[in-house]
Length: 161
Figure 1 (cartoon, rainbow, N blue to C red):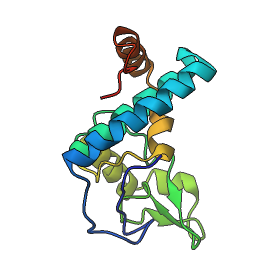
Figure 2: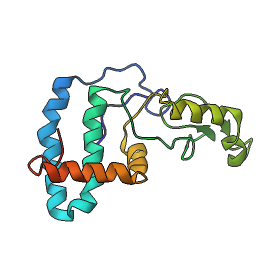
Figure 3: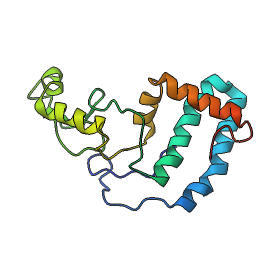
Figure 4: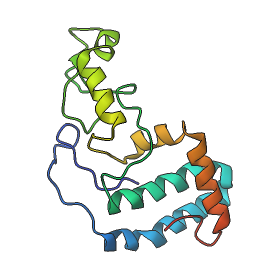
């Protein structure tokens, strides 16, 4: 499940339209069904990352710049077929090229340091795609605890919506 995402680097579709609040509301029953099915099959502990991810999808649709989860982009960068290294699939600035420099040199470059500052200050495009979000969700214990508590406190919705 991926919310609508725009990236000149990865999708080549920058400048598209975002979903509306009504579109997000339309997704809530579908997300509840997904989490309910997962909960029945896997139990709460294994469903928590999915719950948290789907909560984030709804939040991203409502406010694409509202990501609060720390992002580890540049530590897990994107390399295109030509060897260009990007901080992530949404930031259109090349940090270096693996044909010309080592990954360590690229990671320690001024461009990478600046990209990490931009990401840490949430001045980046602020995505919520599964390949980026699940990596960070699985690293944040307190966020998982919060998602689990929300699911337990409202068993009818499992914390979705």
